[in-house]
Image (cartoon, rainbow, N blue to C red; front, side, top):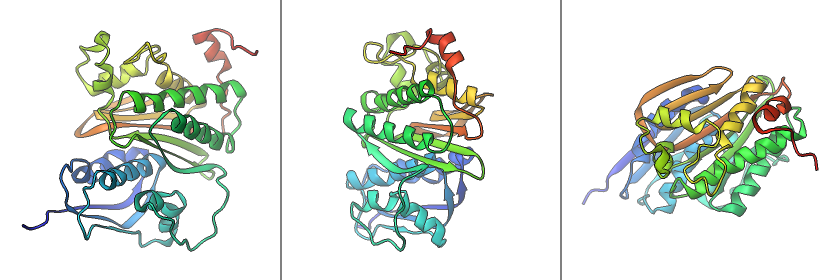
Length: 304
């Protein structure tokens, strides 16, 4: 019997605004449920943002962990030495091969960025989220209440992956600063059931009829699939932070895509994404300081 062959080819750059193109180009791999000879062609890849890196890593790792790669499967690396080096430095190669690779460069300390990291339990996501927040603090001014709020928000977003998403591999997080563009991005990606299906675990949200509506609902305060487990403030606080900073919160789940923050844009996408991508893109030329907003929403901070 002939072995089925599945191919995915990426080219050019993948900033947050191009995430739907990446989902479309990885769709064959995302939908795989039986072994095949897979080729992931990255020869013409130029750049991936943290959300794109996390998604690519999640898809590749799932194929490995679920035994879907037939003999002869390959990942063809980028022709660009800079892009190839970036994928190594951000641990994409190590995570999909499960081996330490000889690298043609000396590793720097992880300052102002964090390589892709996987998490599947409480110990994992607490550590990973703390690391992502620390990376942001290395690139931009932020008061301690905002840092604490960001940590709480990321913890809850990651907790949702572990407890609600039913993701086959847990989640993947990554962070990267862009000093010249004065931007910093933190991304968390999973391949689970998506926000709409997750919220419908709570009977109060059983009537949510679209992925865009589900994302918008999840951005509200105290909305949670399991209110007995968490407060439903993760995406809400993340959005407050980005709004105050002048940044963007981008969410892709199911057929829905929402860009929030200072302005909101919502789209129903043709291509279905079975999971959730959350990306916070902050402006590093603006302090992360939301004391006034936090006080308005939750009361004065506890300084004890």
